[in-house]
Length: 223
Image (cartoon, rainbow, N blue to C red; front, side, top):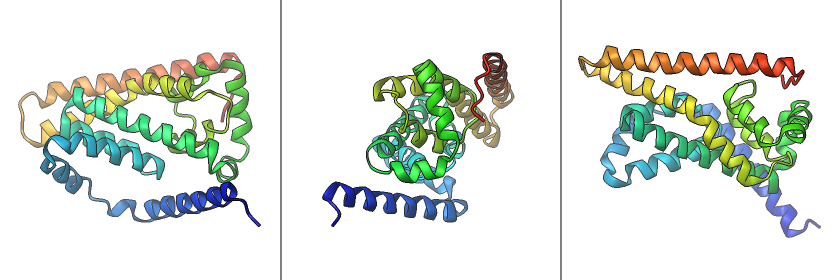
């Protein structure tokens, strides 16, 4: 007979797999524009609802880039970055805890051979390895959140490193979403905002390539 903790883990794993499956199946039918109208209509609660939705979407493998662009269009480049980053970090933290305490066997099956490489990276470099994989997208973001829950990285350093080193990408994509909104509205400053967004995005891409080359010289390969 299964103990209660074992039964809870099984139920959580099944619910998680079902939620992710439904998200992947119907994600193309999610109307981000309608979501934006709903957030705007929520008044002061809109940013809070957006962050909670972003966190849930992160747990259920909805593409974060889509929501990040939407956050920039809805809230502007600065507040949008804060809300996007907060939602993504909350979602990453929830996925980490789910993997560590409830759905570890499911995550281990999904990550296959990459898990041992992540564990090796954490054992060697700790939070610095989290910083590296946040800046260099060599591992799918949503799955990475779960996989890191099965390493020995402590929760607080994981969250802190995730928040700090997801910031450059969040800022670039949020600004890109804001620039898109300005262009759609016919604002004369749209070109300037677009150039800023492209400069930020180019900087993030350059940084990720530079770090990948530097890490390659240390013979740390997580592919």
